[in-house]
Length: 300
Image 1 (cartoon, rainbow, N blue to C red):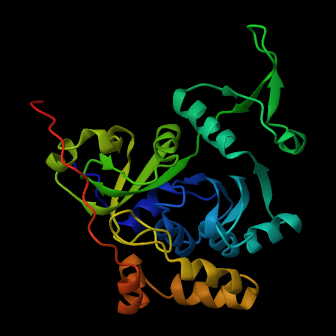
Image 2: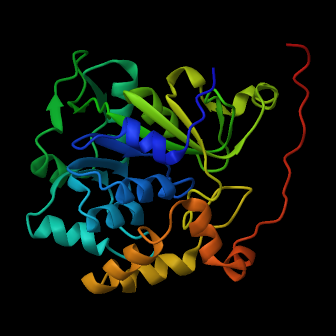
């Protein structure tokens, strides 16, 4: 039985007001299309969790989708701060929890493992311990130095963008791999968006790339170009020009509203969004083929 549905249907069905949502992907494969669909469907009071919120959570906060952010490093990568999220936190309009990158991943690993918490080595970020009561120190039961522990994170919904998936949600990822696997196994529901939907035989032909198994996936959505302005290795490049542009757009509430009106509310889906970007941008983001060497898996 296929799990293929539209992105609109997946977000409508699996993302509810008040949910904790984890949009996975580290620099690479960030699910912007799903974030825009959440904005269009006017989901409210969400707890948005991500290692590096990136521009997608700035946009979702601007659209009044969030009541809280859980994050590690909040910034427009290579540019500066996320103006909207930072301003909302400073004004007391947005609740927040901050962790180190490894702290966020450890929380997901605990959630994926069915454990209430996991330990990690002490870090140089003692200020995080003082500002976040969820980060605790406990004695090493074997007599060593104290360890840091962080609680499990089990999002209501994880959204993962992948290069290709079959109709059951078995998914191939390559390039920079972030916390996609941990988020998928930790979450109660999983939405996969994919550049390509392929036959099961394609997935089976390269099992080591199957980072997300279909058994944890609830919905599969065919959404080419879903992570622009982020990138998908082998499909299109990162749109660095847009990351620079967003820094200027986010200086003004009026310009942010204009952006959302034109590029989110003003298009019906990702296909229309991509067409609106135009051939000049498409050409600029093209990437050449760069094939890996074949391997022999033998008989299986």
